[in-house]
Image (cartoon, rainbow, N blue to C red; front, side):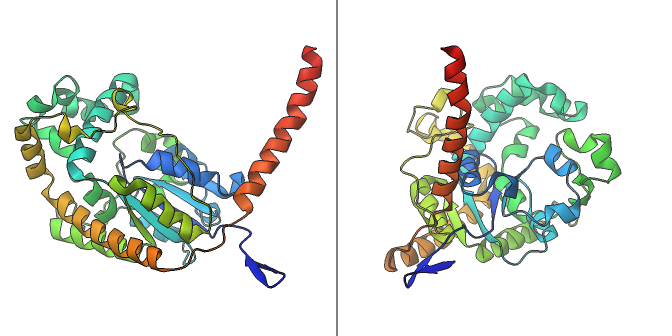
Length: 316
């Protein structure tokens, strides 16, 4: 924070940690936020990236984009200065989106999954959604929000120097890590997830995406974008504004609702937190924005001009 002429200006957005729950619009939001900070101060926590980081190096970034990882990874930063936020989505919409994404991903890159996992989900890959209701493996796509936010596992094997990280075994999905709790304890999963949400600066809702982004931008002191380009979306729905609920039969929707009851409880809790945060935001005066994103954009533009100048002359 700088004071110029008696006016406070925030030069850089505060350090932050984005908990990316699968299929909630996280790639779109994370890609935008990564541009807010200097490149070398941001980290997208993929398995490959983590395998190159020591635990000490991990603790010194300004922006963390956590990809489907739980709270123990945040705790490994040993940081109390990180603004924390996430996005949740209607469980029915999110579950269908994850199933369709899984079908696309496995067909494109089967080598990134274990043989055992591929065998288990084989009935999912060539089935329509109605047929999937009778497939036991369908449950892997249900209640993922609850598991992401409530499950506790040990992430230390992912970091540089650990035998598992060196061997590459942690790069093959599904990622097997030491459990820190019983994964079948639904009550503990729910308590963990709700407790973590209650500590976050912003609990966003995908169905209120623009408002959620505005809340996050307000916490970070940056100007909200006029529009965010959608990333990692289903190609079949990239131009559609309607949800899956409007495309599927009421019977199928009711069946998926039965399978995602726990996620629905968590989603309702997140909705209440979002409404409270949005009401507080609307009741307070607007704040000044960080100038850093505009500065970094200018720097990138000037570097591009320097590069393109000789190229243009050479082409002439």
